[in-house]
Length: 158
Ligand code: FES
Image (cartoon, rainbow, N blue to C red; front, side, top):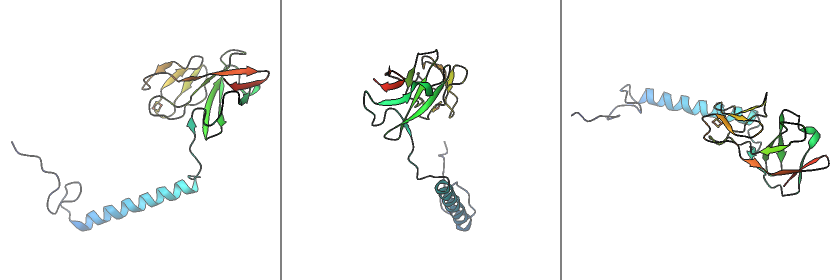
C-alpha cells in the first residue's frame, strides 16, 4: 500500500509544485481579502455590539414592552438591557408569550413570525409561532419560552 503524501519539498500548501512565488501571491491575496473584509465590517458598523437572545440584565418585574406593540397574530423582537433580545408573540388576542429568539441549531436570531411561523434566517428552521415547537429542522428542538406577565398595558418579565 502506498502512503498518501501531502505537500512535500517544493510543494505549496495545497500540494502543488509551482514554487514559492505562487505561494507568496496566494498569501498576499489572502491578506488583501482579509483586509478588505475588516474594512467592510468597520464601514458597516462592525463595532456595534452583537445582540444575543435572552433577557440580558433585565430582572423579574421589569417592563419589557407595551402590550399594544405586540401585533395580534404576529410578534416583535424587543431589545433588553445587556444587548439581549426577546421575541414577543401574540397568537390570539390577549395571549402574549415570549421566546428566546436564539435558534437552538447554532444560535442565529430568528425572525418575528409571519403567517403563524417563526423562521430562522440562517438555515431555515421553522417554529410554531404559538408554542415555539420546531416544525422543520435542522434545529433539534423548539424555542425556549421565557415567562412574562401582563400588568395593565405593560408586558413584564415574570
Ligand atoms: S441557526 Fe437556525 S437553523 Fe441553523
